Length: 168
Image 1 (cartoon, helix red, strand yellow):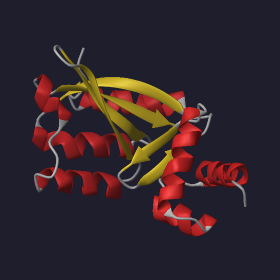
Image 2 (image 1 turned 90 degrees about the vertical axis):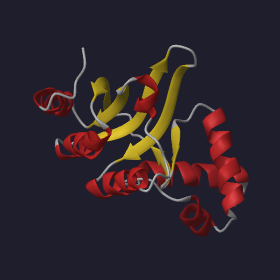
Image 3 (image 1 turned 120 degrees about the vertical axis):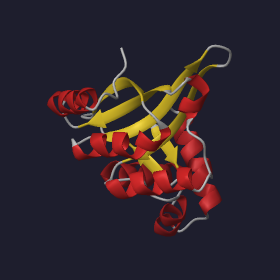
Protein backbone atom coordinates (compact mmCIF):
# COMPACT_ATOMS: atom_id res chain seq x y z
CA UNK A 1 0.00 0.00 0.00
CA UNK A 2 1.44 3.38 -0.97
CA UNK A 3 1.51 6.39 1.37
CA UNK A 4 -1.56 8.11 -0.07
CA UNK A 5 -3.68 4.95 0.16
CA UNK A 6 -2.42 4.32 3.70
CA UNK A 7 -3.33 7.85 4.82
CA UNK A 8 -6.81 7.47 3.28
CA UNK A 9 -7.25 4.15 5.15
CA UNK A 10 -6.03 5.86 8.33
CA UNK A 11 -8.60 8.67 7.91
CA UNK A 12 -11.40 6.20 7.21
CA UNK A 13 -10.54 4.16 10.30
CA UNK A 14 -10.43 7.25 12.54
CA UNK A 15 -13.76 8.52 11.16
CA UNK A 16 -15.43 5.18 11.93
CA UNK A 17 -13.91 4.75 15.40
CA UNK A 18 -16.04 5.36 18.49
CA UNK A 19 -13.17 6.94 20.39
CA UNK A 20 -9.42 7.51 20.33
CA UNK A 21 -7.30 4.89 18.54
CA UNK A 22 -3.72 4.36 19.68
CA UNK A 23 -0.82 4.81 17.27
CA UNK A 24 0.24 1.23 17.99
CA UNK A 25 -3.20 -0.13 17.05
CA UNK A 26 -3.18 1.89 13.82
CA UNK A 27 0.34 0.69 13.02
CA UNK A 28 -0.69 -2.93 13.51
CA UNK A 29 -3.84 -2.45 11.42
CA UNK A 30 -1.91 -0.89 8.54
CA UNK A 31 1.21 -3.09 8.88
CA UNK A 32 3.64 -0.21 9.43
CA UNK A 33 5.63 1.15 12.36
CA UNK A 34 4.15 3.56 14.89
CA UNK A 35 6.60 6.20 13.63
CA UNK A 36 5.06 5.94 10.14
CA UNK A 37 1.64 6.56 11.72
CA UNK A 38 3.00 9.64 13.54
CA UNK A 39 4.38 10.97 10.24
CA UNK A 40 1.11 10.22 8.42
CA UNK A 41 -0.91 12.00 11.11
CA UNK A 42 1.37 15.05 10.77
CA UNK A 43 0.84 15.07 6.99
CA UNK A 44 -2.93 14.75 7.40
CA UNK A 45 -3.00 17.60 9.93
CA UNK A 46 -0.92 19.75 7.56
CA UNK A 47 -3.51 19.11 4.83
CA UNK A 48 -6.27 20.59 7.03
CA UNK A 49 -7.67 17.40 8.59
CA UNK A 50 -8.80 17.93 12.20
CA UNK A 51 -7.13 15.10 14.09
CA UNK A 52 -6.66 15.34 17.85
CA UNK A 53 -3.64 13.68 19.45
CA UNK A 54 -4.64 12.61 22.95
CA UNK A 55 -3.04 10.58 25.71
CA UNK A 56 -5.16 7.59 24.64
CA UNK A 57 -4.75 7.90 20.87
CA UNK A 58 -5.84 9.78 17.78
CA UNK A 59 -9.36 11.06 17.23
CA UNK A 60 -11.20 12.77 14.40
CA UNK A 61 -14.64 14.26 14.95
CA UNK A 62 -17.50 13.86 12.50
CA UNK A 63 -18.95 16.89 10.79
CA UNK A 64 -22.27 16.43 12.59
CA UNK A 65 -20.74 17.12 16.01
CA UNK A 66 -21.80 20.26 17.84
CA UNK A 67 -19.45 22.16 20.12
CA UNK A 68 -19.76 24.86 22.74
CA UNK A 69 -17.22 26.55 24.99
CA UNK A 70 -18.10 26.84 28.67
CA UNK A 71 -16.30 29.17 31.08
CA UNK A 72 -16.20 27.46 34.46
CA UNK A 73 -14.76 27.87 37.94
CA UNK A 74 -14.54 25.31 40.74
CA UNK A 75 -12.14 23.79 43.23
CA UNK A 76 -9.61 21.12 42.33
CA UNK A 77 -11.64 18.62 44.36
CA UNK A 78 -14.65 19.28 42.10
CA UNK A 79 -12.86 18.51 38.81
CA UNK A 80 -14.16 14.93 38.66
CA UNK A 81 -17.74 15.98 39.37
CA UNK A 82 -17.60 18.73 36.73
CA UNK A 83 -16.28 16.33 34.06
CA UNK A 84 -18.71 13.53 35.01
CA UNK A 85 -21.58 16.05 34.80
CA UNK A 86 -20.68 16.74 31.17
CA UNK A 87 -20.31 13.03 30.31
CA UNK A 88 -23.52 12.02 32.14
CA UNK A 89 -25.49 14.70 30.28
CA UNK A 90 -24.40 13.20 26.96
CA UNK A 91 -21.35 15.22 25.96
CA UNK A 92 -17.60 14.82 25.88
CA UNK A 93 -14.76 17.12 26.83
CA UNK A 94 -12.66 18.12 23.82
CA UNK A 95 -10.13 20.30 25.62
CA UNK A 96 -9.36 22.66 28.47
CA UNK A 97 -7.83 26.10 28.12
CA UNK A 98 -7.07 29.22 30.09
CA UNK A 99 -6.48 32.81 29.08
CA UNK A 100 -3.41 33.92 30.97
CA UNK A 101 -2.64 37.64 31.25
CA UNK A 102 1.02 37.17 30.40
CA UNK A 103 1.18 34.01 28.27
CA UNK A 104 -2.09 34.28 26.36
CA UNK A 105 -4.19 31.22 25.64
CA UNK A 106 -2.85 27.90 26.89
CA UNK A 107 -4.78 24.86 25.63
CA UNK A 108 -4.60 21.11 26.19
CA UNK A 109 -6.51 18.43 24.28
CA UNK A 110 -8.35 16.09 26.65
CA UNK A 111 -10.76 13.98 24.56
CA UNK A 112 -12.60 12.61 27.59
CA UNK A 113 -15.55 10.61 26.25
CA UNK A 114 -16.51 8.28 29.10
CA UNK A 115 -16.59 8.01 32.88
CA UNK A 116 -13.56 5.73 32.59
CA UNK A 117 -11.62 8.45 30.74
CA UNK A 118 -12.60 10.92 33.48
CA UNK A 119 -11.54 8.54 36.25
CA UNK A 120 -8.14 7.99 34.57
CA UNK A 121 -7.66 11.75 34.27
CA UNK A 122 -8.68 12.41 37.88
CA UNK A 123 -6.34 9.64 39.05
CA UNK A 124 -3.43 11.32 37.24
CA UNK A 125 -4.30 14.53 39.10
CA UNK A 126 -4.45 12.67 42.43
CA UNK A 127 -1.06 11.10 41.85
CA UNK A 128 0.45 14.49 41.06
CA UNK A 129 1.43 13.51 37.50
CA UNK A 130 -0.32 16.58 36.10
CA UNK A 131 -1.52 19.90 37.44
CA UNK A 132 -4.74 21.50 36.22
CA UNK A 133 -4.37 24.60 34.03
CA UNK A 134 -6.98 26.38 36.17
CA UNK A 135 -4.32 26.88 38.82
CA UNK A 136 -2.78 29.56 36.58
CA UNK A 137 -5.95 31.67 36.54
CA UNK A 138 -7.54 31.52 40.00
CA UNK A 139 -9.59 28.44 39.03
CA UNK A 140 -11.19 30.09 35.96
CA UNK A 141 -10.89 27.95 32.83
CA UNK A 142 -12.74 26.95 29.68
CA UNK A 143 -13.81 23.62 28.22
CA UNK A 144 -14.74 22.97 24.63
CA UNK A 145 -17.53 20.41 24.93
CA UNK A 146 -18.81 18.25 22.10
CA UNK A 147 -22.23 16.65 21.73
CA UNK A 148 -24.44 15.23 19.02
CA UNK A 149 -27.04 18.01 19.27
CA UNK A 150 -27.69 21.55 20.49
CA UNK A 151 -30.30 20.11 22.87
CA UNK A 152 -27.60 18.02 24.56
CA UNK A 153 -25.34 21.07 24.86
CA UNK A 154 -28.24 23.00 26.42
CA UNK A 155 -28.73 20.16 28.93
CA UNK A 156 -25.02 20.23 29.80
CA UNK A 157 -25.15 24.00 30.27
CA UNK A 158 -28.15 23.72 32.60
CA UNK A 159 -26.45 21.02 34.70
CA UNK A 160 -23.20 22.98 34.99
CA UNK A 161 -25.20 26.06 35.96
CA UNK A 162 -27.29 24.12 38.49
CA UNK A 163 -24.11 22.87 40.16
CA UNK A 164 -22.60 26.36 40.26
CA UNK A 165 -19.69 25.61 37.93
CA UNK A 166 -20.56 28.06 35.14
CA UNK A 167 -18.93 31.44 35.33
CA UNK A 168 -20.25 34.67 33.81
